[in-house]
Amino acid sequence: MGQLSLSIFALLRSGISPRDPVIQQGFQRLATMTPTRTYDAAVYIMALEARSVKRIPPQGSASVPRYKRGQVGKGDLQRIQFLADFLVKGRIVGYGRWDYEAVGGMIEETPGSTTKKPKTPPQENGSKRYDNSVTQFAVLSLHAAHRAGAKIDHVVWEEVFQHFLDNQRNSEGSGSHRIHKGADRPRMGQKKKAKKEGTGTVVGGGGGVGTEEQAKSDYRGWSYTSGGSYGSMTNAGLSSLAIAASMLEEINKFTNKQEKEFKRMSREGLAWQAKNYTVTTNPKKGGNNHYFYYMYSLEKACELLGVEGFDGQSWYDDGARRLLIMQDKDGSWEGNKIYTSFSLIFLNRATLRTTINILKRRRATGEVDKSARTQANIQGAGGTIDLNNILEAMIGASRREQKKYQKWFDDGLNQLQALDRALLMPTLIELMKIKETKSFARKKLRFITSDSSMKVEDDFRKWYEHWKSLDRAGEYRLYNRIPFLKETLSNKNRILRQASLLAAARLMAVELVKDIAPFLDQPKEKQLAVNCLLSLMGRNPVDRADAEKWALEKGDAALKAQQETRLLFRAIRGDAGATKKICAKGKKHLPQLTRLVKKPQFKSGAQALLVKVTGKRLKGEAWSKWWRENKTKINANGRL
Image 1 (tube, helix red, strand yellow):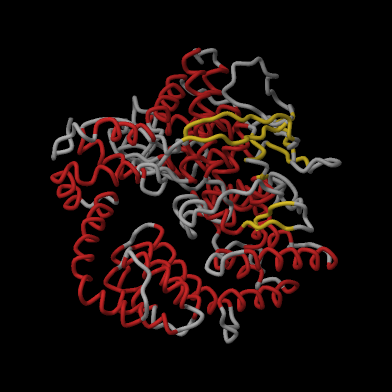
Image 2: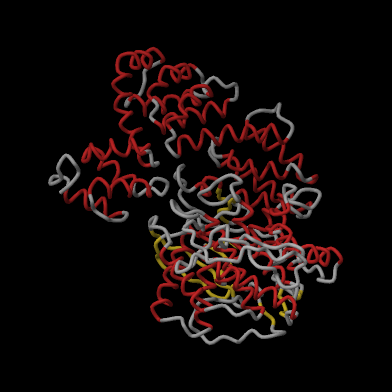
């Protein structure tokens, strides 16, 4: 039921007429169903509300479609009110959040439904289980229900606001980012008299950049239920927060304290999104993990908060290019109706504008800021550009533009580190699906992989997954991947061997010294092998025999020292046994922990360990200062 409702909603928002036979058949089918789950009821409300909204195509130079709200039919409003009551009653009362199952029993017969009335009456939800994904859908649908004319108790909005206030995650550091606001985009949750939306009123905006906000702020996002923040959930938190604030403001129950909290939370959430901004993956989840849901949530959060871009980059332009590259020949995304619906909802915001974004160059750390690893200074373009952006701009470009972009790409590719070039592969693989760019993409993929025998998409995907596993092993200190590194050191592919050497150095995998030593005799790998062994041995090896002798004489002692470090990283990743051992050793690991707490990928776990060991509750740089001032006073257990 939810999938059908989502498909109908996406088609209506894309301009398909409510009188279209497919839409009418869909609603007829929905009328025979009785929703029992939160998702089903929520998306059904959104589809019903969308039936009364007319899409107005972009006008003139505007790139954002506008919508004209009409009168919701009496029958639709009756259903919407019933479903809204179902969701309100099915929330976890007092907490402003929802579970998959909205109520204890099945709901009563939906008005206008042909299904039989169930015997079990609805009951208040006593569940304690919740997640911010299903909660976001409930909040979005109740907002749609309100706009349609349904009555929603103000207590619901107060609970939702408090829930997202209480569940914003801990700070992951701080920084300054430019958040661009549209000149005619709605801004929700601000105590300012706005024109009332009534029947026939044009809503939505045109996308012009009107203001730019820049202030230092903490990076704080939202998670699914607990744990670290990631992209889709941070945007779910932002959109839900904006709706709750807007509704409280509308009914004059938005206090000065709530307004102050809203501004702080939205600023910190947008700062998190700006710091982790990307349209190629779900930030902090990686790969295709809920990617299309992330794009859907990104669009919702930015629309509701009136955001046009982050640090000079347009989230819509970047995302639209990316999605069009990924679209299959049959018009779908991965043949999946939900993915296709999410993509249509995102793309429907505006028509595609192909542009190249000139960026401010960021320092590539090789660990945290992966976007900087694909940036290069292109003289012909007049500045620094993410090479993925150039590839995406090739879609739909003229032949003349194609040649210009290809020249820029080649210039930038030569500037990148050989091992960083693989980060461009997902976009190049998608370009292989397009006739005009297929030959170019294959040629560049062969260059990046140093393998001219590969021809088809699957070959390149398998290679990229292998490289990504090596890159992640070093970045996230995955010591259990050391046997995988050892196996890859004998791989025929030169780039994969080099990636394994780099990962071994990052992991301080001293047990691989004998396996790395033979590379001192290989001209193309010699320098990387020397650097790797320098890290592992603590000195520059004279030759292969020297490295092997060191491994034989001192390797066991070095490995024992490294085992302590590995134990620490296991504890940081949440291993209960390792955590117990680290806490027992107290002071010994405090210097390393106070350094790791400043690194985004280890911050959350290191912070938790520091609190357990010391009993103190500090943040970021405060830990380093505390350690410098008190290290001589701290006992063996790590306490003052």
